[in-house]
Image (cartoon, rainbow, N blue to C red):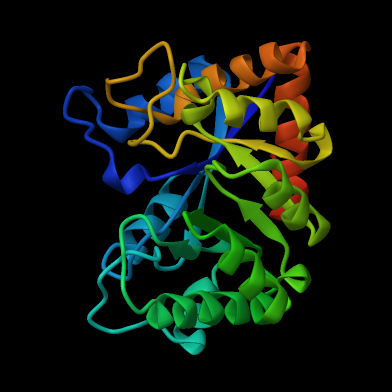
Length: 261
């Protein structure tokens, strides 16, 4: 079975109560589905040390450090804070960061500032960005350009925007990652975008415990289900799941500059 990488999940947020051995069983379930590596992504400063701890416990788990655009922080992370947190071999990325106008409204200056802070930290550490954008594609691209995000590179995670946005991001050296949303029946426009993304710029993810793909939509999501995202994209592109797995896995280890062993 060809190795698949879940390029974005939140192991620290999973409900593992139904598993006899907790997260150990989740990791094993993933391996049985061919998902042998995963990136556990930080979304706030409260849990960032747990994210890093999990990456230290499991050899096949990597970590990121950062604050989601909608997270409420008592102490806003600085560039220096992020650099210090990222000084760890298990940390391969900065984020997730970005803009979210769907869940937040009003003056978005604070989100813009937070996003710029993460881009600066990424450039200084040399660790790529994980970018979240929702209902904010124009400002996201604008800030990426203003801050020189092409020097950092990274991934547009859980991509749901149009092809033009994807192309602008790819021109800056970013990869495009698809989650279980691409398998949803009502995601026709996104499916059309996925068909156009070249294999050399493609990543796959679960964003678990959120956004469970078909055939398990409506149930808890786990990293192993990245396989179903890969299978669906293979079907969209008229190719094999092995080809999608090979390309997306190579892309992951190229982007995050880490070994697959």
